[in-house]
Image 1 (cartoon, helix red, strand yellow):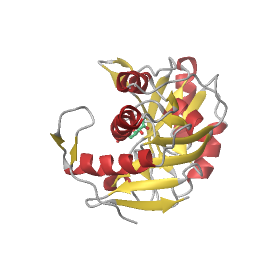
Image 2 (cartoon, rainbow, N blue to C red; image 1 turned 90 degrees about the vertical axis):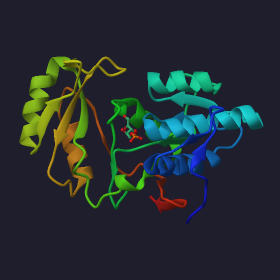
Image 3 (tube, protein in one colour; image 1 turned 60 degrees about the vertical axis):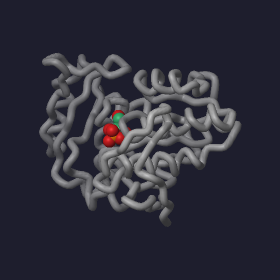
Length: 243
Ligand code: 5RP
């Protein structure tokens, strides 16, 4: 399935020429946002692709008076959504979401995902799990045969980091503590991230189950069986892979 969109965006009142990859991200984002209907409860993802979608949703809210209640997956997305005029609610005030959109770092042929490059994987997984439809929006370079090239982000409780590192090595990966300006990167949940370089992950659900057994792991970036549609932005439209 393909749709055509121009290579420009004007959702912030200025028209900008996009790079090829950004144009693909925006096409995927626009497709997902076009699925949103008035009255829906919507989960907002995090990252550069989700950012296009939040901007597109904001434009629809302002232009069409679209009524939504949105739950952001990060402080960064919350700030952008507020600036866009998208009505936000806490997850304590809604139960199920109708739809969520979010990017991914890699997606394999069976629609397993690696997520967490932006450090928001825990809230992203909570939101995706509780959404009736999860539209994963990516550019073409994110689609791979096996998850592999992007180190798997694992969110850990700082108290347990050494133990988790040991267990990650036992699973066959080399963990690296994510840092920012020399200090451990701290997530919106006050936790740390281990980026874990695995060989090609042929059975992501098995690895996901192994991570669930490690005390001190708050969440891992493998998203298995969660995608409703993988929306791949291409040079002239989108390609849709269904879960
Ligand atoms: C943030 C994520 C993002 O969805 C992922 O990193 C993809 O980001 P981008 O759209 O910028 O490539 O998981 O935690």
